Image (tube, rainbow, N blue to C red):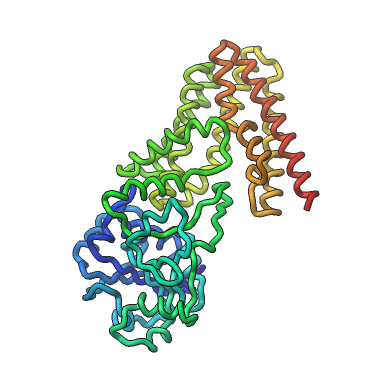
Length: 424
């Protein structure tokens, strides 16, 4: 949505719950980052503890100043109609910073043109323990998020708590429920289902479970075989790095510099050192994305990382081709690399046609495709394959093997892309 079509944003932020930290950032700061990512540039913060809330936001550096905030004191335990009547906007998104919200749920909520309350009628087993302190109505567990209109506010008692009124209106059919249980859980870019959820600030005893849930939700699906080995290492690194000042973009840059080093090492014939660093990059390459998703710090630089990765990856195999050609170990190495590169472009085009047609990646269309993804040619597979040949003292054969594996993988993907397109 454009900024002009967004509702006014009101964040209800009361200490101490809004200041509860999950994976290195407070619920309040997480909500601020989500709001910015959703396109909001202005917000009103209602709080019964303005000083501590303002201090928390003031010390944040990520995209500081991109959300202009006005602070207003409020009294009482609940947000009332009177707290919001001073707002002139036709529509208002009210969100309590004392809860965690999946960004997709807030995006769905702001699309609603009617008075709507975010609920969850059927939390799955992994989320239900975190919902114990959430208020419950006949329709399900209630969140602290809703979209309401100026007309709705005008028709209510000024002292009425807005969420109590909304709950009653949802039950009576006068307001719409936005049910987390009924939202799509499939995330195409992550090649997996991730159930959208919300939950109130967890207690000290359940905080580790909440952090584990958020961390697990950053993992992509349909992995290649090496990624299954990388996954626990990446999650361990992310859980620790999230509590530092290290940013995802810094990790992306450091990984790119290491990748450039691999290119230089391969071209100069330092294959053993190069492959060790390449194996390390296989782990680091997953950390920046997970960290960005975990801490809501996705950026355009991060979104463009794949293009940078691709250029660096191709430079590795070009550097190997140059080395083996110049040393005479593989006389046709440059032509082999060219065939490998062309086949990779064809592979990506075949996958793109499927994703454009079905809105889903070829790698995740079926069990067979997920199996192919686990072993098909891609950087992790190539690196592990080449590392094995370096270890046994046959690096030139390793170059030939990874090139053959890549071209064969393209043939399988092109066949599958044609098959699924013709079957519909």
